[in-house]
Image (cartoon, rainbow, N blue to C red; front, side, top):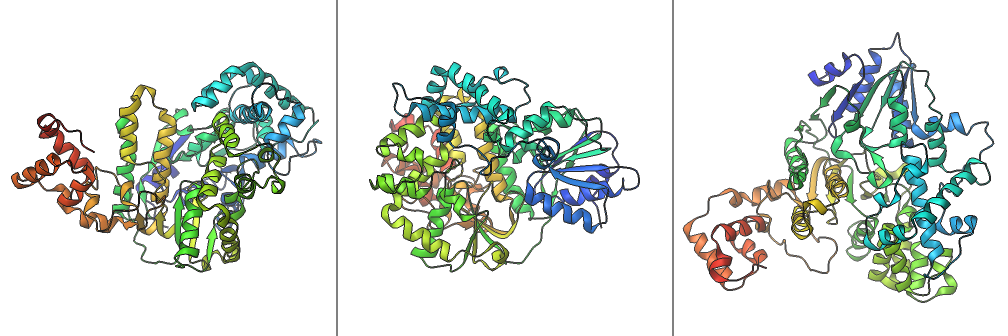
Length: 583
């Protein structure tokens, strides 16, 4: 096995370290070599991010004969210490629904519509916030700090004391064994016990998405510790994850060479991360792409949301009939349910006014879609909002479309036979595909600039915005060969003339681009973007601007990007000369 100088430095290191590893940089290979170098004198614990990563890692360490390495997830480790032999019962569904919390706590409706369910929703989120935090008591946290949307924050502020009191009550019921405990709860209990684990070395993978509770436990271990992750791959802040690579003051090592993709994809990834510079964050990263994969076996469409993926699947399978077999990462059913169990069918039946067919208790309590949308506003329930979006788009055709997707969906073992794999970025984290196509529901550089101009940098939710950029970065770096990317997602700094690509125009009502372009195609088509402006072009620009031509149309006619056109308009002071606002 040929190792890079960066890998060798990590393997030969001593003491606590942190490793910032870019996508596809041989992180697991490095950790295996690190463990092998300590084979004769150490007990090593490797903490994997989730069960699928755990299973894969167990196989890889076993194949190398590294029996001194134990592989666990944070939850499987906590389960062994807290749940086994305790008498606790873990809730089978994983978590509590809003309606269950309202019933268990005996919450009653007062003046507001569905007040008991809105309260229960916030209580549920506060429980999750506390269980993932490094705090010992609920009252040490201010729940309002993690509520952002106006209506939801207003409700949380008005009912602050009630939410705090009922959150503590519910946690107490779990602690006493009065009700089943959640996975988050026994992980928190594990954290609070401050157990010293019997290992000489602990390797903590995906450190950028660690829970505050697990990180605190990890940092206080006496073992030699190594945190591994990628600062720019943090995409679980909505689950109250913290970036341990920034929290731990250990010597930093880097894995900056990706063997998954080529240098052009690496350049695109760096261009996307550079968007963070717009609001004063450090978006600089070193990525060198050494991938040279030529195969086109696995093809995947990656989206930010379930909605975008469902729409694209319907488009390709039913409307255009371009694919016959498909596969959704994770269970397909999970793409049609909100986090708390309300199905797409329940929302559809509410929309179609078929209340007698609604099974979910929360949806059944709604008189109409307006009430449901008011509930969503007060709770920030993003998953439920996305289901509403799909229901409104397809209406009564939706059940037939979903039935067709299920009929053409291959089993997990036959995933390699699918014509197309569909996945959200969260579900495909750690995976790779030969050809990747992105939906256009990700953040764009234009949206970032517009947001800054609208509310100012001081009022930005920087953590949330950075996570949106990270999602696109992770999506882009899943490819091993070809990346098909909607032109509007490209960084202006790298591709400043997306209008030069033929047929970029699309229907304003289309939620997903009809055509995606490979990064190479767009790069070749936008050579003009880097050419100096000529007098003739300036005259043509002034004429078009004077005739109230939109910036988008000017960009297409002059074969330059929107950003380049806007910049030139400003430089030539055309707004002041003609007293016209560009459109």
